[in-house]
Length: 171
Length: 176
Image (cartoon, rainbow over all chains, first blue to last red; front, side, top):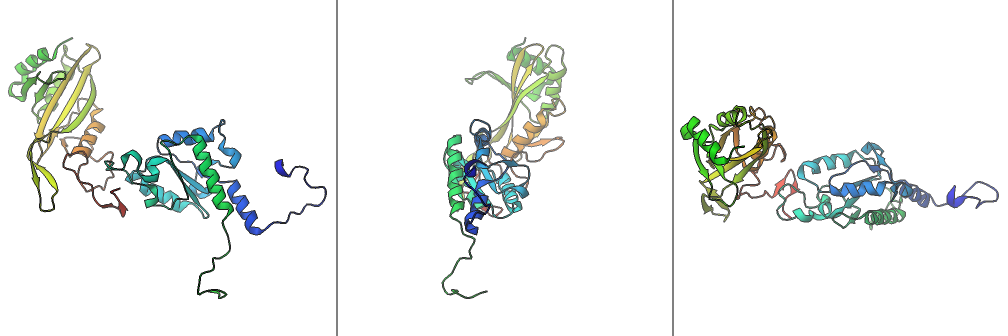
């Protein structure tokens, strides 16, 4: 039970805000699409392995985008691959998150000028939540990227946003 | 073991005018220049002949010689007219331990070279790559498609010296 172990003397009810509960659940088990592109993927795999242990944050690679919450774009995005990445992203169920890992997927990296085959940033095809710099980033950097994403999810709201002019009205 | 010069003399005797020249003036190993439309016959000979036995195609690569005249169109884009594209073949005999470099040049406007896939199966993907990057057409190739670029890439051949990237590909912006 970890944190909650022997914290309660009697009763079995915990009272929490729905939003906090949802956000906590979402950020604590971010299943990633089992998917790698280039040398960054090697670092991503190292992050998943026992030494850095991505699993302690609830990150497990899934073999299908339909079971995944986050996609880590780990490497050079070629035009050929960009089309497939977009399809993978569209196949993921909401809520879904994107971590762009490394210079290539952030902005084209070393291919920014003469890379006739490289998309200059994966954010040209799918929306990115966290950019992790590095070429390739060390596992620690990817872990920090994940923590940033968790922070972002922790502050999310499931309440419908109030837009000016529509206050108090229902659609 | 045979030197490039010995092999050149042997080929010259057998094929005559298909063998153009032996170049030894470059700061690389000497190479034999060959007619692009007869390369398959010559390679087949190099492969089969008992004292040559070139059983391995180590590499096949395209080159843009960029030796034509540069022209600027009304938009200021530079294109190259005339000149040649080349293909280099690095072959080796694993049995007799000798190596050889062949070169063949073909006009830029109609680049055609006969495929050597009949001789070395491994030439298949190398030739597809040379086609993909330079637009060199390999006659008699079993499956001449692009290999690296998308199949629907219609903006030319990226490693030609006068290649220009498009603004968009399938709705994705291409320049930085």
